[in-house]
Image (tube, rainbow, N blue to C red):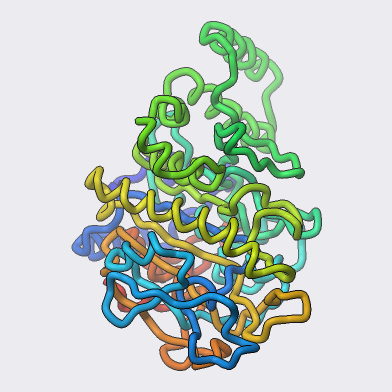
Length: 447
C-alpha cells in the first residue's frame, strides 16, 4: 500500500537505524503524482544468480555463426515478431504479459560485483556483506516506502541468500537504510521431492515450527520482563525486533497462514512444479497476498550453492544443463506465477521483475559452456502496470553489444520504482544524516 501518512517506523524513529526522508512535502507530491498511474501494490523480484544466457532465453540469435548461436532454436511467441528460446514454450505463450529489456549492460564481470550492480543499481564498494555503508538492495529500498501490519515483514528473501565461492555477496541487505530494512530470510517449506537446500547455513525463518501458541507467548512475556530489567542496547533492540516479528508471525500474522503451502489448492501446487523454484514462486504469491510488500525469490532449480549447483553460472555443459533442468524449471515457475496472478485478478497490482548478474559470452568455450558477459543481457518485467507484448532495445546480431536503446541496471530500477509508485529520484538520509538519491537511472518507457 502507499498511504500518504507513514507510521512511526518511518517518521518517528529516533534511533537513526532507518533512513528518514529529506523532503517530506516533495516526497508526498511525488507519491500523489505517481498514484495517478495506479502503482502496483506489491512486487515479486526473481533473481537468477549466476547470469542467465540471453541467447538461450529471451534473445535468441539464430543468424549468428555456428560458434556463437548455440544448439537451441528460436520459437515464435504470442507476440508477432518476438522469439524466445525453444525451451521456454510456456513463457512464449505469456509474452503478451511481458516487457523484455534486451539492451541492459554494465562493466562488472565477477559475480559479487555484478550482483551488487544488478540488485542495487550501484557500483560495488569494498567491505563486508552486511556493511551499513553498502547501498540497499532493490528489495530493501521498495520496502522502505511501504507500510505493513504488525507481524508482517516489510520484505522477505527466500529460499536462501546468494553466495560466491563460499562468501555471502554484498548488496542483499538494507545497507545504509539500516537493519530494519534487511529482508527477512525465509525457508521455502518444500522438502523432498522439492529439495535443493543450500550447503551454506543462513538464519532463516521456518514458520512450521512445532511450538504451541501458549509456549511462544510465555517465552515472549518472560523475555519482555528481562529486557525491561537489563535495558537493551540499540543493536540488541534491532535483533529483538526480528525475534518479536518471528513470534508475531507464529502467533497471529496472516503471513503464517500464507506460509503453509499445504493449504493451497493441490492443482495450483502442481501447476508451479515439484521443485524448490516453483514452490518458492508460489510462496511469494501467497506472501504478497498476505500483505508483504516485496518478496525476493533467488531462483534456481534447486541448490544455488557453488558452481556445481542448479544455478545459472553455466561455464561447463551449458546446453545440457539449460535444456534438462534450468530452463524447464524457470519456464514452468514463471508461467505458473503469471497464470496464477491473472486468474486471481491480481496481476495488474503485482509487479514481477526478473533480474540476473549479466549475460553469457557470445562465443561458446571449450567446455561447451558460456562465460560471464556484462556487455549486454536481458531482463523482464510483467504486471504492475507494465505494458506487455513489447521488447525494449536490442542486441547486435551476435548478441555481443547493445544495438539500440542501451540501458543500465539503474534504469531498470527506476522503472521498477515508477511501477511501484515511488519517485525514482526521491532522496533519503542515512543514519548520519547524509542525503542520497535513491536511484540515478531514468524509467524506461514500458507503461
